Image 1: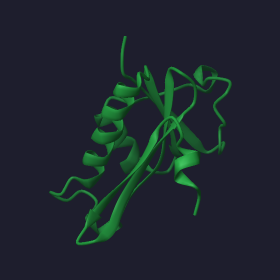
Image 2: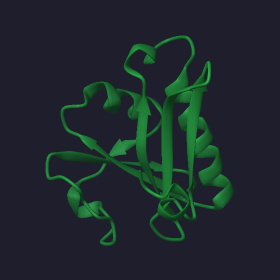
Image 3: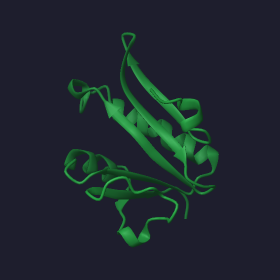
Length: 122
């Protein structure tokens, strides 16, 4: 396991618990003073899409904290085959970036990933 306090320094890491079991998590890394990066968003498979809205609650927390920090946007990468994830992110205001739009300091992990951005302020 990584040292979340160090890895997410300048951002944060949150978990969702249900009956004392971790059922989801989300992380926010600081890329620079204006951009945060959504990392490690997971929800236990059998709880996805339920009335508990675990993914939405985790994301809302990350977005709120991003705004408090003063980030102007949030980036994320997700596998190109993860269609349900793409729909979730797009529903929450993310749009896909062309590779030429990716900030140079962003470490692009996988050529088969899609990169999305959410503008927090105009």
